[in-house]
Length: 215
Length: 110
Image (cartoon, rainbow over all chains, first blue to last red; front, side, top):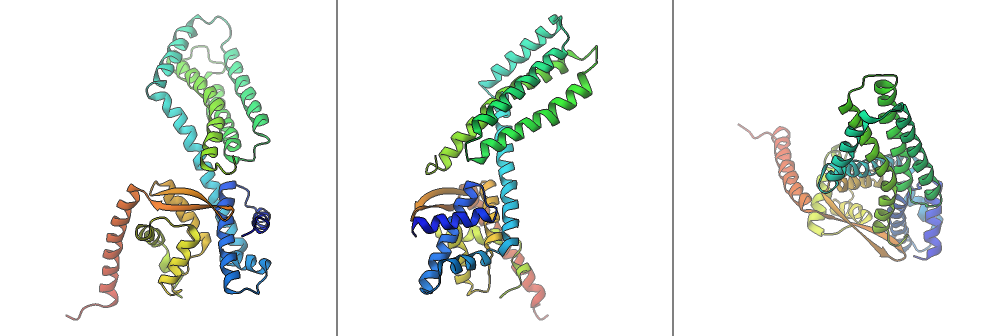
């Protein structure tokens, strides 16, 4: 099939809301194969009609909607899995050494801190915000969705699930917090900053491996 | 054409079996193969097949290879080692299930 027709299929799929490259790649091949078969069996058929027939056999608009919904869920799962694996590596050798070192640093430093510990939380918050913005700007022109989704997912996770409930609910305004709990919190925040920094980059590498043709 | 609800729950088994018999296959090829093998009695929609393939891939039952074919990327699916085991198990279960159904549909005369 000529590049012109493949571009027409891609454009048609985009109109139907298929934005992600891996979903697009599989569907472009599917539609192109279906159109080729139709054109072979019925040489008089126009490209447009053959394409519409392929769409109908997919289940039409409703079929697409269901498919895209499922594809979005898969994207979310892929992102979550990578984030989870990044954290998991800090519990395994050799990253475990880094985890223990960070935890030991905080455990022994916390009692010696003379300034209000809230400043520390604000510093972490600023670090997350800075990395999030940096990632956002550097990924803005990249059409691959996985790194962008990871950046948003990680930012949202840290702020809404981890940072906000623990900071506001457990530590803020408390004079006598548990040093072990505080060490765990600060160690996790440190690893979180690292994950926020590396995960989008890891996803770019992963995407390039999966799709060398578009890299 | 058979009732679609009969197909539910058997799609994964069919896909695994086809891949076990044919090695690497792509989505469109799987659909055509099922249509051909069942003389159009089983018509699987693409909207059902691809999510099933992605789920099997995610569960580690399928491996994926992407190749460039006629100016586009084609995704080939094949059984992983885990998928081969799952295929054997699912086929056995399916056979037992069909035997059980058979005993109800056509009970042997006592």
